[in-house]
Length: 118
Length: 113
Image (tube, each protein chain N blue to C red):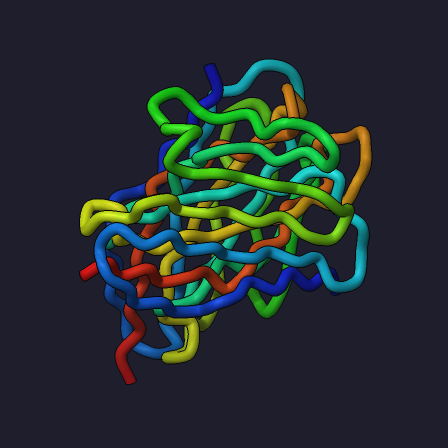
């Protein structure tokens, strides 16, 4: 089945540093990838939609200068949390969708990245 | 806009009990419906899907039927196991811009031996 790899799985860093999270589709080319944030015991909140070769589309209320998204190839999207602060601590999950023009294609999710800012 | 309503959890069952997690939706057009499962500390895994009315998705003993007349997609399993303990998310894709998923709030299932 489709596999999405996310790295790192856990990162702890000091306030003010920038953190990059990678999301790779391992056995298919993903023209569209999604980045979510999940707070404890809550559902997923879509942050942005990443399309290969174009600028990401951010959801309302998400700071595009804080959360930089790059989708330079069909198998890799990255999320960079710039100048991270403790309130950015969260569980970040990416997903990728197998290309297709119908809504019946599911999204396939990475295992998530636990980000802790001290 | 699109929305998904799941039954509130947590749900606690004994092993071999019958499971139902209710899910209803509101959407434009003819959405595809999904159930995802999230084990502690992990991302989401696709459990099953249905793409049109009256379709039944099934996997690992779980089933859900796409009911257009009641706009529902309830998840069922006849006999749960301890290993089924996880959070279950109902979701829909109405095929709009970029095929974004709309999630329910999730239901925590705990199965005791």
